[in-house]
Structure formats: structure tokens, C-alpha cells
Length: 213
Image (cartoon, rainbow, N blue to C red; front, side):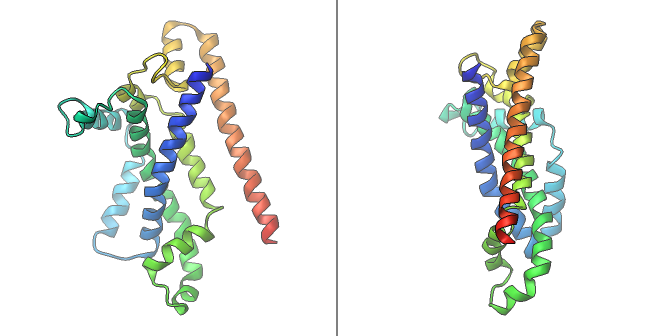
């Protein structure tokens, strides 16, 4: 169980980190900049938030399969493929949610930032830094989505015992086998991890609030 738990955390946290590097700056840019195609991009991101995981998994499978454009790297049915699938699923979520958070900050600080000569593009790093504690909630949503993922990681990871089996795929497997006590135990562990991460983030936000006061 420890190996499954370790792999689950490693895959989900790595995917969250990659998705954050893409999604948060993109969300900040959409919050402050106005350019041709922005509206369509916002609509696309909102639509991708509801992308069925098995569809995302199928697309990643086609990319990584032997006949696909990335097949020569041999990534299919590896933890790396699972990271790619999870990152592809949660990056649009992070981008869309962070846009909403940072738009409010931009409205509040726009005049001040412009007075310092910072236009929309140069304001992105400032907004990301000033909104870092508010963005914790966005990151928690991304982590929860990644940690709960089953369909996409099953498709691209194969649920191979000792190699690509995660908490969620193990729960699905044990349930299908009828071993409900083990499936329930794994589910409780997963819930405890998500709860612990949320409690840590809440503690950080409260500490930041006391420090700011």
C-alpha cells in the first residue's frame, strides 16, 4: 500500500506542478490582457474544465502509442504518461479559476500598476505574487482533481501492479474484485490525504492573514 500511496502522491504533485507552470500564468494573462481571440480562449478553457477524463486519456494514448507522434519515447504505460494525462486535465482548471481570482486583483491594482509603468503583460508576475494565497484554493482544486483521477490514468498507465497502480485505480480494481474492505480502506486513506492538504493550506492562509495584519 505504501508503494501505491507514494506513486499516487508523486504523480499527482508532479502533474500539479507542471499544470501550475502553464495554467497560472495563462490565467493571469487572460485576466489582464485584451487581445484578438481572448474570448474564444476563455470559452475553450471553460469547456476543457469539463473534459471527460477518458477522452483526455484516449487523446494522450494516441499521442504516446507506438504509432503516435511521441511513440518513439516509449512513455505509454509509465508514470510519466500518467503525469502528462493529469497535467493535461488540470491545467485548464487552474487557468480558468486563476483568471477569475486575478481579474479582481487587476481591477483593484490596475491604476496603481499603470502609474508605475507596468502594463498588462508586465503585471502578470506581480499579480501572481500578490494573489499567491488566494491561488492556494485554485491549486487545491487542481490537486483534488488530480488525486481523484481514475479514467485517464487507467487508459495511459495500464494499472500495472508495482509500477503504475495508484490509489484510485487500486480502489477501482479492488471494488471490481469484490474486496470492498480494502477498497474502502484505500478510499479513507485518499480522503485523509486530501483533507490534510486542505488543512495545511488553510493554516498557511490564516498565518498569512495574521502576518499581513
